[in-house]
Image (cartoon, rainbow, N blue to C red):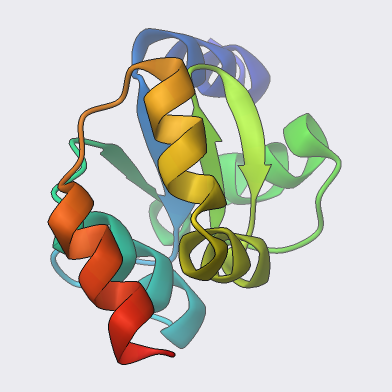
Length: 119
């Protein structure tokens, strides 16, 4: 299976996927750590894909999304964005709205605590 096929299958069979450096329990870069931290704190059930474990996936995800950086978050098969976009969406409440619209379970109180802590 090609990297593109593997990425497509992963994105389409998981409601939320984070392509990141490292894993959700052991991120290996600050940007990946920030996004994983938000998702973990909000109690989102998501698949994590460590791009450091496979060079074909590491380049393939950039080609797949036409987005040059990692991490990359996908919700219900759609590319949402990287660290800066996810941070902005979390603080503005847009990430909550996206999760609500897509039927993704998360802890609304935790999301509010993130916003309060960053107000």
